[in-house]
Length: 543
Ligand SMILES: [Zn+2]
Image (tube, rainbow, N blue to C red; front, side, top):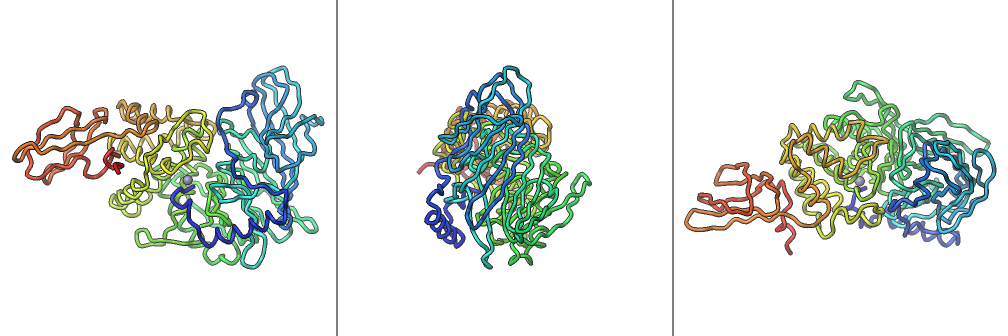
């Protein structure tokens, strides 16, 4: 998601607040999703198993703001256990649980579902089935404070969105709510009143129709994070085009758009395809090419749900390179590489999702408007940085402990500095390898250590101290230019670990290594250290 817009109070949000107020008034059992967080220290009993597969069935009643559901999880047991511990919010009532088809005892309190079983061997596969129902938590400020958004389109048709990036999948299904474990694949079936559609992840396998209801059966064969499992319900028009990847493979690009906006679908998909093409040149082929690039119009701003990005920016285009441009479309699309394919096992490394994705936004600006556009975008990212808290305050962190605006801007700036340090050839090669290597994608989750190791290896430089300082502290280097006498100046830099800087000396820009031991330079004007602002400096944040 995008931080800068977190406090936008637009027409959409006002409308939503009215709807939420109504929801709370009508359904006294409705709770909001505020206060839920995801990740943190993995509970020991959850490290005893891995989830391989989720199969979810929802029967949604938009009028009642209610659903009944069955979830099936295939798990592989890593070490003997007596209890299978899932996360599921208390808003739901669990009716029955089964382990390998046999009904089992359970308890459900404090948002934890414990199912009794007894497995005394490892390497065993189990199927755990849960029958439950309820009024799911209502989103207060989606997608930042997520949950369900019960809205309606301008003709009064139900329009239901769901967002859970910071709360985790437990706000709508029983899961191991931790980033370190993502299933290999997932299937989601959504039953809705006839006439409505449900858009979800992966491929639409089929649609079955009953007398008053229709069921949409979706399946993804790619690994997926629990917060990326998602559906949106509405009276949609479906537009599809074909994208040809850099690899030559063709793929559908699909937009589930409100019928009232159907005329906008074609232009919007053309814009998306242009962005995907640009990203493919930097980060390699689109990571979910065997399924689709999908968009669905949502009653909240947006989210990077894998192969079905939430789009709620209401077609408020600006201009880039003389053409209409949608920043939200670009940003969420970038997450298909950064967040969905390359993904972290600990929310401490949230900056890998948001920082590199924000940097990807800047590279699209570079593609359209050249270096000038790129530097303009990075300057705007820099202005948003506060540098008050480190990007990584601790390891084994929850979303709440880490989420702040700097994971976007300062995270992106780290990449910007590395581009300068490494030079374009090595930097862009390292970035593409990080996005495409089997070691760093899909099931192979990454951390800051993988990033440091990989970029150091490709550059042949010791980058650990610079990167670690950028991530774990708010300390930034200092640059000092002192006029000594006449046309002589003393230049020094502190805290940059002997990395190169640009220095503008009269009309010339030189690449130099400066340390805290000042060097004397002759110039007719005062020299400028780092005139193109490749680094963040302590001075940038002095109040
Ligand atoms: Zn984002």
